[in-house]
Image 1 (cartoon, helix red, strand yellow):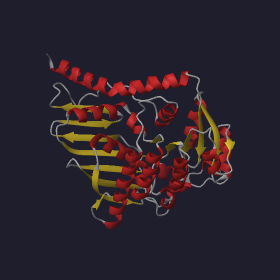
Image 2 (cartoon, helix red, strand yellow):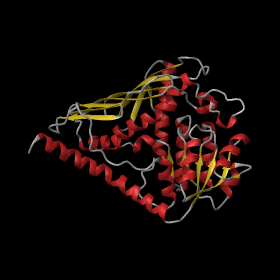
Image 3 (spheres, helix red, strand yellow):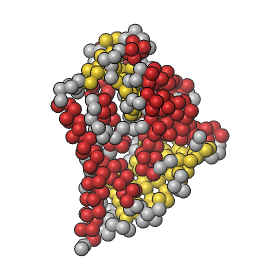
Image 4 (cartoon, helix red, strand yellow):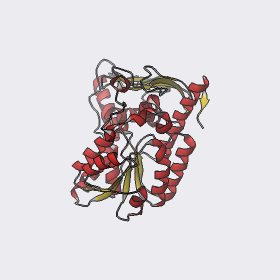
Length: 376
């Protein structure tokens, strides 16, 4: 057997394993969409920068009815609720009291999540909650407790889990292709501060995202906003984080004391240290993930996955991996399908969402203290 054949067989096995659940979920979602059964949802809060994208998707799906929309700001709810042809609720309680509403999409400011999640749990409404779940570990754990006690479906917008490159990396880690993990790094950066994405927009309040650059409301700044996605991938691939040591800082000052970049050292329970870098002041983000071990190495550069392992003869960092699995649908579609009764959707659990908040809280605390901080 040639090295190339061995490599192809290993990759094919990993790809089939990784793709199985994803394909089942996609097939289930198709069945739900074709069944003619409408899912009745409500948009609770229209403040998040992802609201326009979610509204577009919801309008594209014939099996979704958005009955209500609510937000504290009349301009926001008029624009985004109107775009969905939804009724405007005078309060969030109106939404939670409606027996027709099966689930809610919470896109409010982060500091409103706690009260809204508690109300949704009491009303036993399924929940899609934008990230981060909360500003602190204790609050996020209380929310997870309430969600689990209510027995409702939950997920959040960790879309990086749907990337085929991350899915196959998870399979390789499980199969031991890296040997003992020795290091990892993840980056998630854009130029939001440089481009003024969070500036006030006089006369266009409905599309002003200024609150996201106010840590008192958002719970975090740029490092937490962007870093939570890559943190989720690192923990999804490699396990729990025990402590953090971070440098998080302002660069341009465009948004006052809101942080715009940061890098954290994360000590994993597996006995290795990883780095996490994120921010709003980068003109490019060519390398997004790297994993190294005693038997293998992988890196994602310019959206291409390179992989080499001693266990896979013929594997090489000189050419991108082409045998990738098909990823599942976006998190919001997974949520809709799950509410429709389609089993096997790869939803993020409330416990996972809370764990990411706790790690990020430790990173910010360490940056203030200038020392390693245990994740509590």
